[in-house]
Length: 237
Image (cartoon, rainbow, N blue to C red):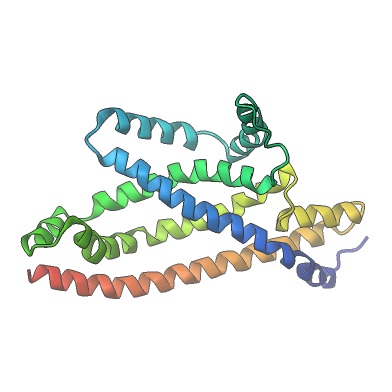
């Protein structure tokens, strides 16, 4: 069967209705990953030795574990773990297992991003804020966070792109997202037009990546302007 470019563009609309699941996984993972990553970063930067060692140990182990293995461990392991306490979770939606696996992974990744960003900010910024009577929360919100977010934007954008791509692994446990829909179409076609389907899927991911990159650059421009204003103001303190 000859390659058909027209089929590629007719396949894209058949994939798009399932894109929402892919985006939902990415958004929820990013939010949960940032929350737990912030806790890990706090432990790494804190003075409690045992918490610092646990946080670094967790990060090392998780980052060395392939995402697919984490996904399978979540999908097959959590039901057995809950069964020990008399709970049956075999019937819950597969998306929850995906979120657990990816949150475990990206909490470790984002904790390093948060830690390195925090350490990259000049300590003089804290001292200047304290000298004018700001509380720690005020200093974080008005001075540290805008500068830190600007520093973190490029790596955060790369993390989002990586998350979107690795989210395609969800189909391996039967979750029908955009990748799962592509595999389903190929199966219904008995393997015919596989190249066209995968090319259509690639186009969807290319567009998503392009949007993330453009959004990242827009945020960089915005926070660069605000950061310059803050630095100019803090230097005059």
